[in-house]
Every structure is written in structure tokens, then in C-alpha cells.
Image 1 (cartoon, rainbow, N blue to C red):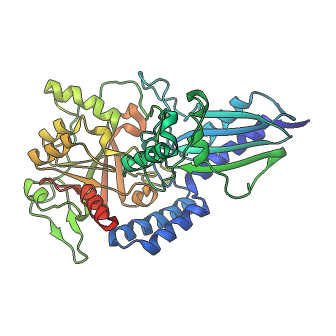
Image 2 (image 1 turned 120 degrees about the vertical axis):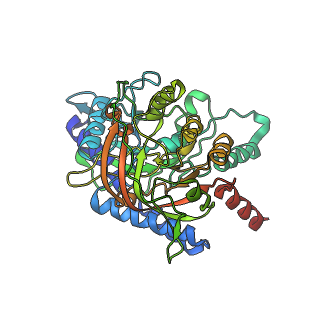
Image 3 (image 1 turned 90 degrees about the vertical axis):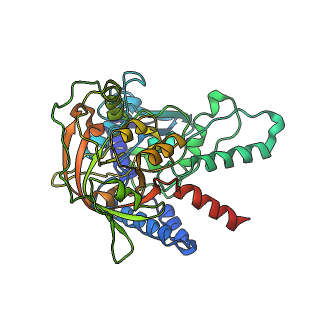
Length: 452
């Protein structure tokens, strides 16, 4: 009988949580290099180079490479000859998650209930899958799974008649409809067979594949980590806390000139400084590369849910959105001496139900990742506004463009509070312009032609 104290488990899980958010595995980095060798698009090559730089920065500076540091899925193989002493195995694992996310400046994303949306504050509890196996070893693997991936997972019960071809068709459909909503590096896990009860965790296990020998094994404890970016099976629980009255003041970004038409720099990138005028928006087209200097406001699901009743009632908002750009992001905590932690984009479609009413009030731009609904595209045309895309999975690099940060409303929402960012040269690309242009659709059409 081998004895393992809970403190060894907690320490190992803590390190796993940090490693999973700071370090990409070697096979993922090799995949970036393979993609660079075959990518023909200049924009595509630039994104891949940024993702490589982001991975190096995250590793060396200990900044999460994505601001969504995920909920922890833990796969445990407990040898039947192992005795865990000093407490419960599950408590030890959750203590490790708590310590890893707190000490590692990682974002807490777990809420107490899908309805009251109160954040637990430390990213616990984790999702723990435990299996009793022969031998005297305790093996733990963790996967930090982001909400963009979780929101794109699927589950389907197929009939026997659909067979292998039905499985292939369903997998391809899941990949096709996931689109750009989940951040790279994207790993698709597929689980096939069994009943609903036995299969729900299998795609996660497939994504959390074993790679290299573990680097640490205290008292017979094996550990591996994996950072997951793959589709979704159940409800996403982004950060949220109870509502309270916001600040009465209404911040407005300082004017940046008279709203003259946007200028194009020598490198072909357009320079944008909010507040934006109709003429500024009309000067932007889908596919344009843009650098933003000036003020951005951050807001995600929870903040929008508080803004919408004010809009509906015709009451003042805590920020003046006229001419402004809202960045859909919930940054990870900043280390001492840093302005912000990882600050990459959230899936824009999650804000689709709120966006048209804000555009009607004069909002001129939003920044996110992934596609927007036709409702939003129509509103962009109607109100002369634009949707920008920021690079998903590059939150560490993007943090370098943020020079100042201030919480201006809903501080109790933590990462989902409304913040005012002062940025310099923040890189984005126009996804949807005010004339109906759509970079995602145009790109897919071009790819389809090349493959036919």
C-alpha cells in the first residue's frame, strides 16, 4: 500500500493549473510552425507569428496566454493500492485549483449557480472525473477549458443506421459550425459509443491526450497538464456577481479631433482614434487592418445585462457610448507592476441580443472574436457602426498595448466590470463593416472555391 498525503496532491494541482495557462505543449508549437509553412495569406501568417510570440511571452513572463484561464477539468486515475491521507482527494484537488488560480493571477470563472450567477471567487469547484485502476500510482491530468470552447461543444445520440458515415458527418458539422468562436490553439476531442451517462466526459478525455513524460512525481503521484481550446457540451458559467447600484458619474472619453476620415499609415494599416464619426466608420471595410489609439471600454455579458434595463427605461448609462468602441473582454488579474493581465477577446456573439440597442444610442464599434448574427449586421448598417476582430488566444501580447486601466462601473462584477482602457496601436481587423461586408463569409467563400 502506497500512502500519498493530500498536501502533495494540492501542490501538484496548483502547479498544473499555472503551467496549463502559461505554457503550450511542444506539439502545439510545432503545429504553429507547420501552419506557417503552408499558410499563403499575409494576415494568416501574421496571426500565426503573433500566436507564437504570445506563447513565448506567456511562458517567460508568467502571463496567461488567454485571459479566459478556463474552468478546471481533472482526470484522476487512482490506483487501488494507494491510500490518500490527511483529507479527501476531492478537497485536495480543489485546494490546488484555489491556490493555483489565486497565486498564479489567473481569472476566476466559476459561478455558484447558472441563475444567481454569483462567482465563487477562486475558480472552484473543479470538474473531477475519477477512475479506480490497478496498481500503486495516483495519476492526475488537468485541462483548463475556456468558455468559448465550452460554448461550441456538441452532443448527439445517433441511431445505429447512421453508422460510421453519420459519425463523420456530425464531427465535420461540429467543426464547421464552431467557426472562429473558440480561441486557438484549437483541439477537437471526439467521443463515440456508450450511453449518455457514460459518454459525456469522453470528448474531454480525447482532447486531454497524453504527450510527454511528466516532469514531477511526488510520492507516486503522476501529473500532466493540458490547455484546451475545443468545443462545448454543457452550460458555460462566465464570471458574475450580485448586482448593486453603479457609479452615478458618466465617463466619456476625451475627443480626439473633429472626426476626420481615418488615415492609412505607410504600412497599409489604418489608424483609428475614438470617438468615431459616421465618416470614420464609412472609411472602414471588411478585411482592413487597423490600429486603435485612445480609449476603449470593456464590457461582457454581465455588464450588458445591467446596461440593457437602463436602455429600455431610457435612463442614463454609467458610460457615454456615443462614438465609442466597446471591447468584449474580461482581463485576468494583473501581476504587481503590470497594468493588466491577459486581455484577449471574448466571443462577440454572446452580446448579440444587447448590441443593436447600444448602437442605436451612438456606439460606433465593438471588438470581439467570432461571427455576429444577422440582427447585429443589419444594425451595423442601420446605425453606421463596425465590428472589429482581435486575435483570440493572444491575450498576453495584447496586454502590452494597454497603457492605463480604470474601473468605471460595476466594480462588484470583478473581471466583468466596465473598464476604461487607454491603448496605443491596439491591433484589430474589420470583420463586419457598415455596408454589409463580412470578412468571415468572404474568407469561407474563397476557401470553398479553392477546394472545389
